[in-house]
Image: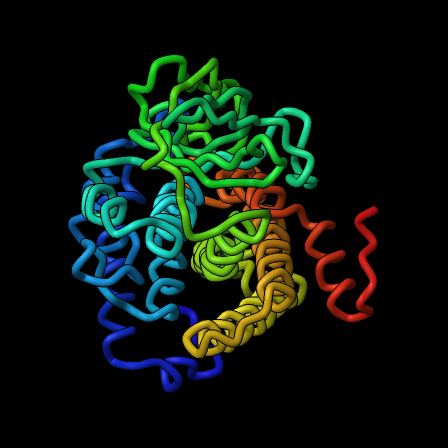
Length: 385
């Protein structure tokens, strides 16, 4: 654990136990195999159930629905340790927790909660989240996915794009406009006729994660699969804020993994008969990395406190997501340079983290969009249009 400012004094013993449990699992089950899965462009599906068994999926969901009933700092810590293994693993857990379980938990009926949440929490079910469309990414309000009332059912038509977990998902939380143009959330099950989820291949990033489309061709959705507790863009935005919060923590894990690997290498690698850690430029890089990690840790911790108090604003969450992911990407790049040619090999994690973070800096709101969210918060003026 990288803790230059004694941040452990700010968290509880339970938090430390959770962190150690997640770290031990990642070191034992993820890090030894993730490079090979990434090279093969293959998702380690078995890890989802293992995360469920350990309580890493929907940890903030109450125990009566299969969750662990933990606080938001615990959730953040788990995301941090998972992303120290790989962004793909954290992405799967984050989507499952914040984008699938969260809306069912907060917007669903009691029947929906009891039907889906325990299976999602255990990893028996895999879920995905359908908001982004081929023609609408940063502008989700322009979505074309259509939900038409027909008797006691709805007919769903349209497509979603860049969906984590979609090729293996048992259910999809899909956002679509009804006949009145109101955005509603729907639970779509994989065996609904007319629903398909083709995989997107040939990715250079998140190669150990499954990404795909969601295609709806006159899919009949029973009325009981509508999420009744929310209408409009507020619903998906609340889900995204939960996911963005987890990313703000998760990116720190990737940064720490890169920094720690670079530090260890610099102490062992010798040039001109001395460890390269003795050279000024190497020490400068390490000192700057540690400084940025520490700033990100303080930002994430304070955001976690605000989340626990239900006081975290969307602008604050956007600032933390944007800052911490950019920080992690910069450290991945700088630490890769410290290792020279060795930095591009699978023996070290920097290049894999770097490629993954190129996706993380784009999804759940792009780097620039988060700037505009903060700018709107500061000025009260929207610059989106």
